[in-house]
Image (cartoon, rainbow, N blue to C red; front, side, top):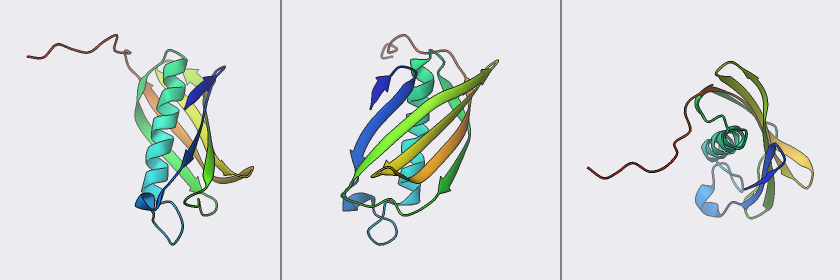
Length: 115
């Protein structure tokens, strides 16, 4: 994944390890990728947060062994609440999209010490 302005973009190819329905990516994997993508979109705006809700629309099968384009952005903030949108595309067609609500939290500045 990489940052483009206030958006996060990426490309991924899912191997058969991530299969759900025949020749398609498992919906749970898609959800996990969206959660991570939207979290990164929050972080680049300086507003990390915990996932409050994540709503996914599975529009068509997301194929295995095919380049999948990822897009995500923090689209609005209200107090500690951050709202994001994301999409997965294959050859320009949306295979899945997501909307998420994240609750703001302090961004860690480093790793803690081992006790």
